[in-house]
Length: 317
Image (cartoon, rainbow, N blue to C red; front, side, top):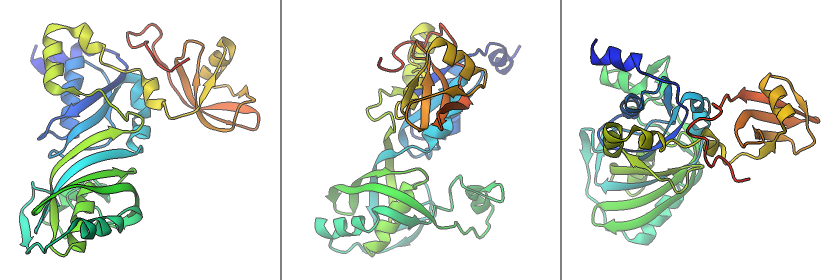
């Protein structure tokens, strides 16, 4: 039996979230598949693509946790990036071909910060043409590589912070906090235009993804070592899926309420209205739920394995 067939045969149901420190040079999907292989997980998904150039936090969801991957995809994120002034590229980063060089004017911190301020808040941004966004079902990067004349559609994004950390000649080190769908490459490209010289990203590192604001990330090399020496320790790195829902209000249920909600029944509820995470008496997630009109209804059922190795500190009591 070949290695691929052996891997498929030995896959197992395992649930949780792993906070990967993605290495440079791998796509997000390639990183996911490597970790999924190491865990022998039967189901996995990532929470939003990082470019191959980028490093840093990539939450990976396995088993039941894949049901909340889309929520993490839409979360706020923070990045540190380095930009080089004076050159624009086909991809808006160092992996592309240089298409134009311009002289870099004398710039002081005040001038740079004034330009950054115009790219902060609710802004309209044109995504890079080399991106995973789809047009008629085809990724833009595929169209661009095929030589098509690709026009990415402008869209609104939210940039909470775009700050100068360091300025050294034609190099800028920047901090970005932004909402879902924001491209740091586009921010840097547009900053270069506002400064009159063009710019592209030379380094990008994701620092956090809400609610993992101080993430304990694990490198791929660390995971490989554990897979070879201590599979139990590898499994122990998985966080309960409930930690990915830490930003939601909690609805604590008794045993009877939890059973009825798991069966798809709405239950009487006197708590606050709105979206929440319903938890049983043990702190295990029962469902993403919607409260209103005196009732609590399941929006997405969550079948967390009882007695799973990941039943540790799910939520504070």
